[in-house]
Length: 175
Figure 1: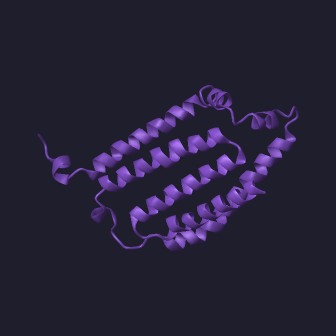
Figure 2: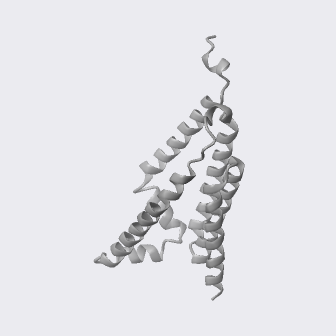
Figure 3: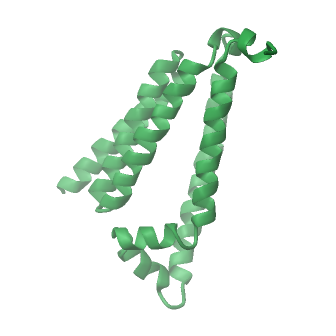
């Protein structure tokens, strides 16, 4: 019973702060709301018994990605980047039903795949998913290329943020 209360509390926190991500007009508030959502999702993982996934959530998303967003926020000259005051709120609200439909389809496909597994491999993998050995084995064997490509994309994004944030006189002057 206590786990359901904690799950409900973390879910309510995640949903309320995700609305803050969509509707906040100040970029600093958006990043703070996003950080709160990511910590609440990590709390949901901890309540569900997936401690390693919760720790990865905290380390990768709550720390690394949020620091990356703060870096981009400080590096980009927002006076030039924001040509108008619109934050595309209407588009965000209109795309919400599509997002819910896509998540529903993902959950349906995942549950169908678990029940259709002939040898029960998915059920066995999910039951042992909390261990570091399983996560490391899958991440560094089957998904090593995707793991390295994500790190390359983050590196290119940081270099792009630095180049955008440079002064025009530094960027276009020849030595």
